Length: 152
Image 1 (cartoon, helix red, strand yellow):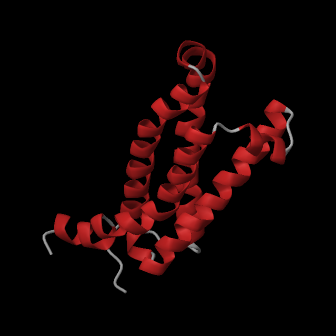
Image 2 (image 1 turned 45 degrees about the vertical axis):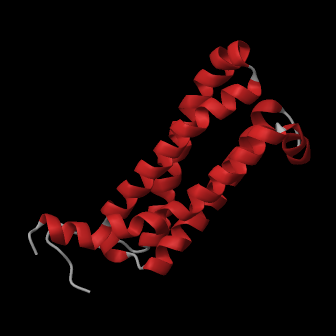
Image 3 (image 1 turned 60 degrees about the vertical axis):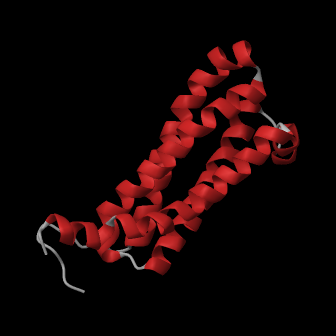
């Protein structure tokens, strides 16, 4: 595979891509959560507040996956993008469970049982979208978009 000028070799682009993707989406979710919990939940209730946050998180997932695909697309295969999504999902679930245990002082089972059935179901769908988005976005970024931008 031909490297383009300005490309930097990465030792493990799948893990690096997964870590960056996780970091962006987790950071956005953490910021939104820090607004949602103290300000929006008392006003709308937990279910409505979580559901209102979901479209914003979907946009963050879509944009973060596009960024990661553009940034690391030359060195990751289509199968690699599926692995990026799965690895990032594992990081996200671990981080969320650790925060639930550390900040809320609840056990993992207690945290899962406390989820609202409606917003929790939508959240599971968002986790699925998070896992598959790098693979879906690979056709809209990566080496093909760089080739088009260079006029090739």
